[in-house]
Image 1 (cartoon, helix red, strand yellow):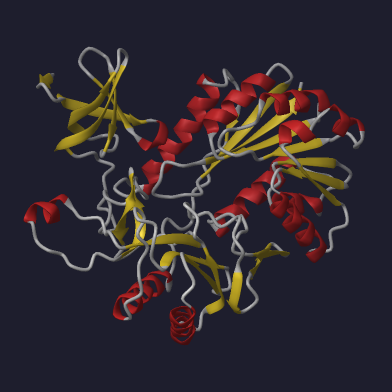
Image 2 (cartoon, one colour):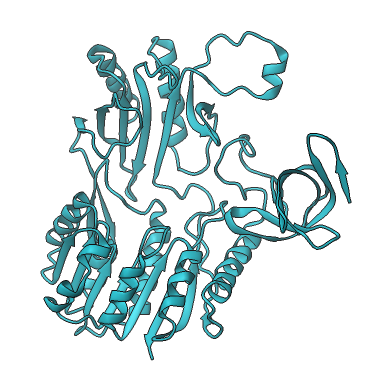
Length: 470
């Protein structure tokens, strides 16, 4: 049933039956039209305010919860529903895993057009909270106000905030009181930094006018409990900076290294900034099954350490190396998977587009005493060409772990030319993975898939697919 007004459409009594892409809940109208709903979970019965009406579907948000889903649980965080993360925190973890597995399975079948394969039960995360080893927060002098605060017409005075950007409102920052994604002392450090900055009159960044002192705070830790803290400062204020940093080091002995960057740019990216080391070595060391990795401020490293370890173990298990194989590792990043499989292979050849990542991969191979790895830098679709294949040994096994957009069609074509006996495809987006698998299915059988949950309380899921040449 629909209620209409000049401004909106309300769909009444919509039973939400399933989870869809990007974590929305899916229901249908009495006429059978699909309704994609935010702010609710499968199993809920809701009234929906329509935001977009198309010929085949509606998009909207739940405005009235008429009947609660049996899968509902109480959210752990006071910021749930406002913060852009942890959107499934109100759903039981067991059901989160069910929906993630179903999404991967359906994508492989519907998008990939692949019918017969073994689905290994999803590998859930042992820790559903405190699983991230890296978090980034933003400073702002314009704290986001709730609708209640705005309507109260109260003068809130100081509006400094340290936290997350409000989804869809980049200039507004949610002032975080708590977050359950990173273990302590993450919350304690963040709150202490804010308290110190307010007490000592340090300027929080003004996104609209592009001015201020404190800009971002990044914290990352290793499995040994050692911490790195990185500040981005819009401008240099040497005395204020040094007093703040000394406060940090005196208060938190867990800080192994403290670094900073001066960033007067229009964005917060650090990849083109010079990093200054104030204390420590400027990096942390991490170990995974005997392999050592040097993690710097700019390093890409899986944010869920324990689950990443399981992902790499399963990738190696799928590759089933005997010791005499040549392995290609496409989109190798800092060479983490390449290092992991190198101990079981004859030779590993890694390719990546980011020079800093390749430099790290080479350094890690040297650090781990691996002499059978070679790394190349270049855009994958350009460097992975006929000349490259002609000048390198044929791959017995190919591992690929592309970004969310999946592989370029030219890369898929080159894999088919290379024709390795086995392909292990690791993906953070099973929809684009399925698209790529469809291009390969005439030449390869998809033998099995294994979804891996790297990000509990969210809709995101990784997937490993094993392909064997026909």
